[in-house]
Length: 457
Ligand SMILES: [Fe+2]
Image (cartoon, rainbow, N blue to C red; front, top):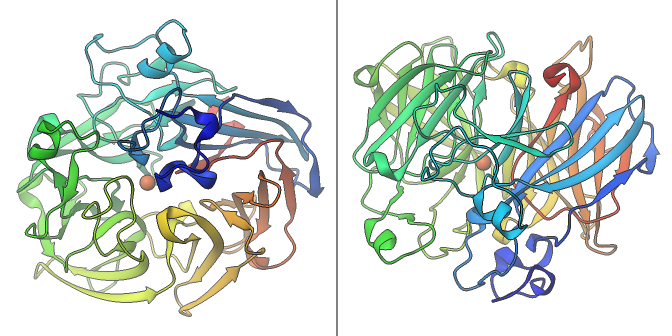
């Protein structure tokens, strides 16, 4: 066993370097800013990630199962008012911190594990999210854990860390999975009131790790890919029983937005794994374009976290009439965490923003993709600087798709501190608009969002 303080040199790569957890919760006020924070940024940048608490066994630790920790930076009036990092008080964290259990809408026996993957604003509240059957956890404005939620009694069981918000309606479209359902996943729509208004059960040949989804104006995309629940692993007590199955046919399903499972057109694709789409949309000829980060495999040889070959940006064109697909490579650089101007989720976009990564998801450059021109801009701030997921924020009165800011956490391996970088998306490789210095390092994590105060107050 190892404690959080001596993991930096761990034999488990997902516990070492800047993937090692931090040992304390920090609150800091009036952060130093280099440059000028835009006045209209009024809200919080929030990011979730695994941060195992207490004793950790490096031999069995899986990156996806580390306790959730949300990092937040509150911006207002051109100032960075505070930084906070807080563990999400699931059952294990509350026990470890010797705190009372978090109030829960679910029975005491309901599955609950690390809520470590994303943090979003929706229906006036802040939510820490994870996939695989553990419920959403409501967080307060200052990142205190409020409640383990069932969305006012409307959530049947599992949720996802990757709801897709329809920019036209504000509703969340979600693909959920849970091993207890067997070979079935569930599509959910969550209204702007925070209540599930529609569910569709979808039977599949196996139980895939269904991390994310994509929507177009007409369809919801179902990623039925060859990383599936493995009963032998589960019986052997493996902490994360999803593994690569070379015999499982990879395919993407096109579910009409108002359809049921029998309406899905399945399009087989060459074997791969997709955690994250960049975007999807309906083309004029009736086909569906999907841009996504493609991994050659997942959890085949490396079972402690995702590291099965270079993740690239690829495009699939799916034909709902023929159930066929074509594929091409858009960018061969290793990258992940793709984001866009989210007013274009489900519609054609020209730009994307990705984090360049090296092995075992170590952070490096930031990439702006111009999908029409098929060009990329690479932001390299030195070999000691590594960027996490970029988030795009439109300016008020924006006049073009990339008229806004790109915000991302950056770790400096020389100082072992992190900062929040705000870039002008149109001047991607230029001097940052502002850099907010943090008093601590933020471990490499998963997903974050800009949550404007207008969304939650
Ligand atoms: Fe993700």
